[in-house]
Image (cartoon, rainbow, N blue to C red; front, side):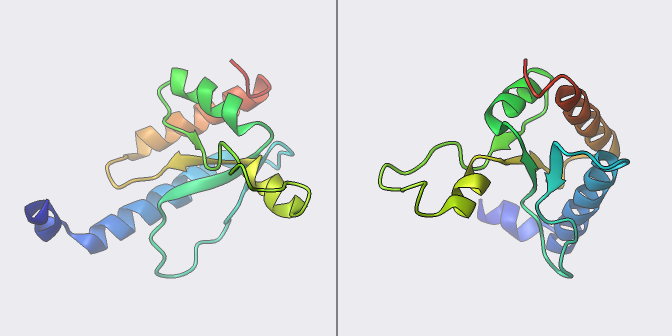
Length: 130
């Protein structure tokens, strides 16, 4: 692990992730949709994103449909902690129920991003279901 970390070009990692984030975001937003919203449409300067968080109607079903198509999407908060009271924090509850993430790691290439965007839009057109 230490040798991999020592050999990693961290500036290139940041640049690649930011480029993938922007490309995927651009591909997903050619026209306004009411079933898809980027949680962070503008990346702050210097931020190295981990994923592209998207607000969708049903992240569990959509991520399952995308996995079948080879897209490793995941619902960010699939489950509530047993002590969490959804009624006490409705905004947090809404976010927990609507956020899905797409990978944007440095090993993706432009074709990967195009494939992901195409599959996301196709799945949303089908209602986000299998």
